[in-house]
Length: 293
Image (cartoon, rainbow, N blue to C red):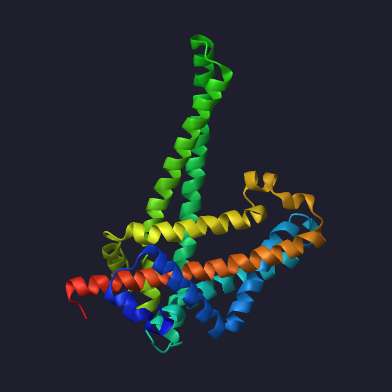
């Protein structure tokens, strides 16, 4: 599949998952080639975010020196991701990108929406984790009672308890992913199409019908991969305690940040590319089925 014929391929039929990955890889190469400076700054911002997360925990008296660059890097990363959706969509459809007030308005609206969603998800996760801790403590206490009354072996009890905890975590994770998946086409629609935000959300819900897993599986899989890749830099307590970086001196952390930050940046652009490609493919199919122009 040549990149110049990608739109035609997307319009003709729904592609298989491996075709999406192939198309996204070609799109990634074209995007980087045509947006070198944007991409370089994005990689630098990602590297800084990872590196500063580690050194920030050791520079108690100079945290303000890290705070301001972190704000700038975070804003740039957000703007870059939104701009990338627009640029990739326009490039596939051979449209000229119009950087006007309308586009800038979309930048800030999407950033605001994503921040709100992030805060809501954080609140949900916090509440869920709090309730899970209570449930797990209750299960442990009840299990200890059963252990003594039923004469269960300690190893068998740990196996049963561990299995129950894993099931609870998987159910919680699945519920969170399902909630998030309700907007999997929204950002692409709102960025690429000139339609009001309410209409973009309604179209998003229509495209999700029968096409939720089509975008959920590759996007979530790649996002989990990126999370695992950057987990040594995470500020999540359990991951921080397990991170190998805490054993390294500062001068040794930078090259690790450089490598992981670069790979993570390319992976993020790849995720954006594949999400736009899947969206366009699904939308073209929807248009054909409903005979809409």
